[in-house]
Every structure is written in structure tokens, then in C-alpha cells.
Length: 257
Image 1: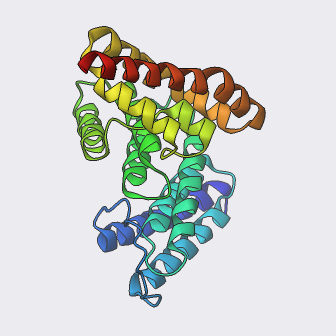
Image 2 (image 1 turned 180 degrees about the vertical axis):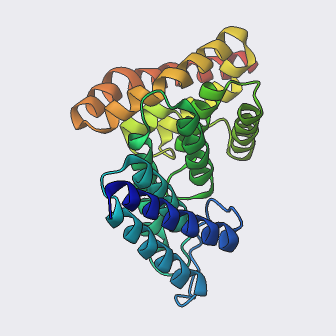
């Protein structure tokens, strides 16, 4: 077979996998993680395993074709995100890795594909305990930025963000979470409450929050990969900010008294 034929065969195999996956999952992007999964022999587990095998077969036919790799990677992300049974948490971690890989495979300038992946990644993160709300909002905001806030897709992203914020509060602080390693850290909670209860009430505060959410994911990604930057950020930014917020809260309490 020629290389061109191999690519066509690989894409056809992936189309078959996609048809089966959508028929079985009904377009579901993620199955939430529950701690009481005991049905390790769930039929869906075997189905997912079979589909992953077919994806690998397609990749072997055209291992260097970007379109094949991208389609296969997105399918594998969805399959791992809907795994039922033992090792489900590790399956969700693998799904995240595939979404990140899919984003790296998007050709420069193909914003339509990036927006689609970001949207699906965001929905996955919102429904998985592994990824968390901050990463969900980060991806949904990026998708909305690409397609435009007033577009049909942009409105869907905004709706999902609103649901996340209504359900769990306004979201954690990207930089504080990256620095401290958890969105449940005391400092993150203090800063998030101050944002929601104080800054959000004022025009200047809302502008600050909007600007912060546009730039902080990029900064947080850099910080998260360096222990030195985590230490510097915690000492020179997070700690002083928390002290200021605590002082503000005490002054407000005195004033009310």
C-alpha cells in the first residue's frame, strides 16, 4: 500500500471507532469518578479497551500523519474519560494527558480545532475530580476567547462557566493554587472569598478579576513547574496578599462593631 492509502485506511478505522463510541456513550464527554465503583467487570470497561486497541491499530497504519494522530488522541481522551471500574482515577489522569497531547497536535492557526478541544477539555475537567474547576474554567475561557463571547459556542462556554461558579463559588486563584498545590489551601480560600465578597462588588474590582483570569493561567503554568518560583511567589506575593486581606477583614469587623 502507498502512504496515502495507509492514511485513508487509518482515518476510516478511526471513523468506525468514532461511530461506535458515539453510539455507546451518546456523546458523553466524561463519566464522573465515584469512590464506590465495584463493578470491575462492567461491559463498558471491555468496550473501552477494545476501542483503544482499534485506535492503536489506526495509528500504526499512519504513525506520522498529524490528522490521524489528532483524531486518535481525541478519541482516546474520551474513552479514558468514560472508563468504568477499577483504576478509574488513573484513567482520568490519562485522559488529561491525551487532551494536552491533542492541543500540542493542533496546527498553528487552526483556532476552530483548538476551540473544540478546549471546550471538551473544559467539560471533562468540570466533571472529573482529578482535573478540578480551575482547569475547567481556564479551558472554557480560552475556547470562548477564540470563538467570541457572542457566538453560539461562546455562549455555551459562558453557560458552563456560570454553572461552575454558581455551584462551587467563583473559582480558586490560579496563581495561589499553583503555588500552594491545592485549591483547598487556607490562603486560596481567603483570597477567593475576598474576590467574591469584595472585589466583585466594584467595577474596578471586576475589571481586575477579568484581567487576572486572562493572564494568570499562563503565569500559573510557569510557577507550577518550579519549586523556586513557588517559594518566591508564596513569600513575596501570596503571604503579603493574605495579610492585607486579613487586615482589611479585621478593620471591617471593627467598623461594624
